Image (cartoon, rainbow, N blue to C red; front, side, top):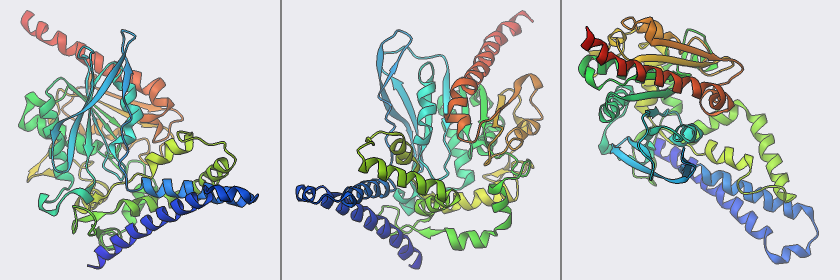
Length: 422
């Protein structure tokens, strides 16, 4: 019960701060306040507006906000976000461009389950739906999943990805961003053993910790110096009474957000102070750069406790993927079973979360894959976010990934003809 009380205490603090912000904003906006020529009142109202919006975002799931796309025909087409596979812990979404012929490239974008919603990949999706059929894994907030739905750990995550791959078929091109990279690699290998005909055509791993020890960072060092007992005692709580997942053990989103902010507290503090001053001066807008960034950044989700703990223990501490010792449902997965899925890794030269060397380790694990089906790229000057959503992605990495997909599609098209001639 103390864990439920702690969870509810955090939610109470969030709710209270949201209310205080709303109250300050409302009081400062009363017409009578205009009779008092004191700039502090405008600052007070601006503080209330920023505070209310910030704490409100922490409990809200962002919208994709992708409503139209301009096709090759020069017309704007409506975009419909459809759920094609629904599961307790996550759905498979399809961004259907209405009135446009089906595109040849079919891409499964595997989003991370690391505190933020899949909408963190919004700009990635926008850049791909122009000329691709895009599918995205949409992981659910653990606080909204009843305890009766059972557990969800790294093995369950791997099995979910396998099911999504099976559903989309062998012409799928999988792109895994950050955290899911090692588990998607394992899912591909397991599928190669169990159901070879359902394997994807290509697999692109972007900034993922395949081998966390290849190039240590603050993230990997944290996993090494903290014991599992300490993590479970300090990070895990039970969902409180407010949500459908009451009683479920989770790593709370609010606790994760506190960790995110503390790593760059000075920068975030300055950003909020500057935004308050801009609003007080009438220089801010509802969709300015600050709000666009923090509306997404502050929207956090609870993570299933067993998923968080098993990720730290099995991926970072024991390095089961890096050692090719990963077990799913009692079966040891062999990465060498991947023999025909082309694999490409992408890393950022200035990535301080998954540093260069961690992701490219996947190519050495694919011992059954010919070198002609392996590729890697290190983007100069790019940080972690930039390799999948920033300028580096748009200008350099996206064309490389699509070129990699097209090249292997062409090779697949030639393969049957070569067999017939033989």
